[in-house]
Length: 181
Image (tube, rainbow, N blue to C red):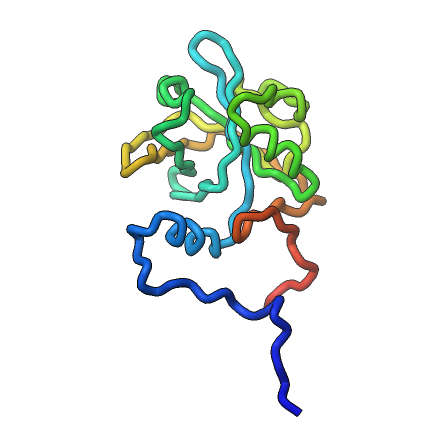
């Protein structure tokens, strides 16, 4: 008897000849890196709340405490984001798929799906979240078709009894129960 692996666990075969010039294949390959999901919020210079879903959050430095996010240059509100002197990153918990989807849509009432409070930097902080990082803008760099926005963390808070919302291979996922040691 031959042991045939379950096709659900068989890795997908990517076209190795596609190269980064094949944008869809490149995007699919990048999607194989599992990420958390975050909603970034700010207040515009004229007092409007802005928010959007990102999965490009990363730590940059512990001293000083720096984090970064990436914002697409074609984002309709990009000038508002670039003009803001502070922002907040809200890491989403596994039960916040609807919040993520709401903030990912450009024409939706993003704030209808999430209750928020005013943070120490005056930016909206989601009432339910895994963690929130309030930042002063530290640096911004134009790179390719994105801006890398770096923030100096001035305040953060966490909720201990929650699990992260994950994004992998173009779909939302939940953290499995197994911990690798």
